[in-house]
Image 1 (cartoon, one colour):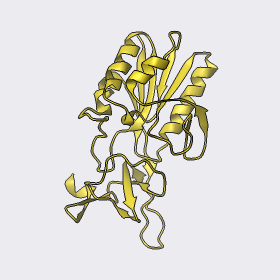
Image 2 (cartoon, helix red, strand yellow):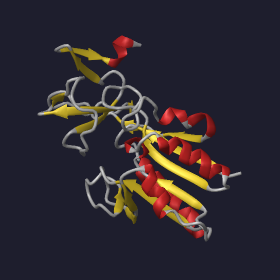
Image 3 (cartoon, one colour):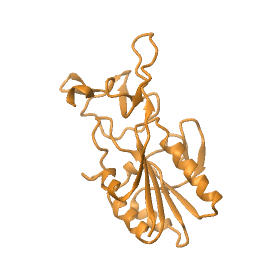
Length: 208
């Protein structure tokens, strides 16, 4: 029986960095590894996964779960998936199936979207939480970058990805997928995570 490891958290918490670290450990153990990434994430390089501090490894870009099957090699020991939230929901069955075939799955991804809700797979109501009962889960946290005027950043542990448009919180109704980096997103703590809904600003802390 194989196993599934999930690395989850908000943006800038080090998910991809941790995925690369785990991959290198598998390579040191002389295990055959294949690394896949969704083509939608083209922030830096279509054939690599790259951390925000520019560490990288070569990856196979795919558009769907079906594409992974097309590239998957029979003798692979470890199957790694970056940005798993951007896949279709067939990725859930794929991971469970491969674990049952004695493969190790290591996947990283956002557990929450910019609205603070579970990040749903493409064209589906399913999300990464479907895999959590069957997985060893590493929940990483970032540092809240909220900054008022010229003051210092908040610095509290952050679990949310704040989408900003022209420096202001995005509307709840804006498109779910808008791939960006520091220019459009910030890691935020619960106190400083804002949602613009019905033209009114709400803080996540008010809904808990």
